[in-house]
Length: 579
Image (cartoon, rainbow, N blue to C red):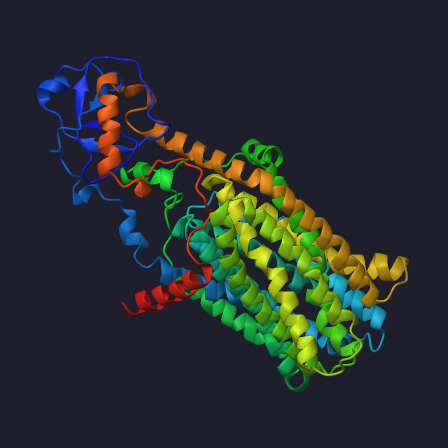
């Protein structure tokens, strides 16, 4: 069997005929592979496979097609990946549901733990300190979970155990009778929430290729945000009657249930199985066996500008988010004078805006990226900057005292605009890092995000309110304006580095795949006399859009309309469940 490479791949590709030894040359920088049979006499005349030199003969059309046995083993594994992804997204929803369960009932919990009407103690102990424990102090443990996603044999088991422990931590939070028990429970729960993100997105990257990842990422990100917001809404609605502990009990039980379902129903995908440049290698029975090393990870984080900018903007963008997660509901009910149900309703509208922003951000990001890969970071930068205005209006407008249309418009617009860039961040990280680094890169990004969210409340209560003496409203304003403006500038700089780093990663994967084949670059030669005929033959008969090893600078980093893909994703999931 001779392995040959051609600039396009088609069922009508002409076979390869042996030539004498000749120097190797490359056609247009692209390689495509097919298998063809040659006679035993021709085979015996060649001393070594590495010395094969072949030419494309456009006049010959007979060839030996691949058999069913040659097809990739991924096919059966991929047949129900939408349904599995839907189940995992539901588990992801409940893993994150305890995040803000305390926020609507912060004052009620303060009385329960003996802080009474001391608002400073309430903000410090139940606000900033708990956020610090769940988001920052838990980072070493969540990092271990994230890094484990790159080395364990079963990420399914890893995410199931993580979710189960997180559910137990939620129940323990509701059962806490002392502040020590409360902070330890939140610490464990925060570790599981943060650690679940890189594991889930590592699985996502091997279920969906780069064309579908942004739509899938929109779905998973929306489920995470919906878990946070809807959990907070449920706690706000039931807290005044059932107490603040009730929502933690329910969240913990449902999280543990879905952890068991994931363990039973989800199958482990092949690592790197959705990378176009690796598919042919995987179809030949080879595995993507590159492993993460510390030096490789450090080099990727420090030498690749896109990784550095994505991590840095993650910090500045999420410091204000941490403040809003902890204090927005209580701010609306205390400083703005709304009732707890009205404040919770506005937060619910904010959550709807975040969900719409996630879908709309994917759609507009698609349009921007189709025009040019550089436009996607510019779109993310612009929406980050525009998101400042509606949040300031929600905080500072003195003309509303109930959940009227005006604060709802502010909340919806703020959530929508601020969520548009975030849905595109994780796909960007995936697209500029090879499979063996993705889990670690997502873990690093997640650690920075959670560190920022944990530091935000402490920055507000300790520095702005404690040292500078400003109130919560002024502190909110300062943090949103300064931190989101800096993040917007960093995303604008990403427009220069993202296309280059994504193409570099694709080239590295293609080189690895080529080196893993039986015949390498040096085994291919194209005779001058047949070069023109071969290229014209390919131009006339081959479909270049389906090439496996093309390293062209594509116009998009993800494909299709994100909104339609999200709906199609749900439809495919339910169809697969019915089947």
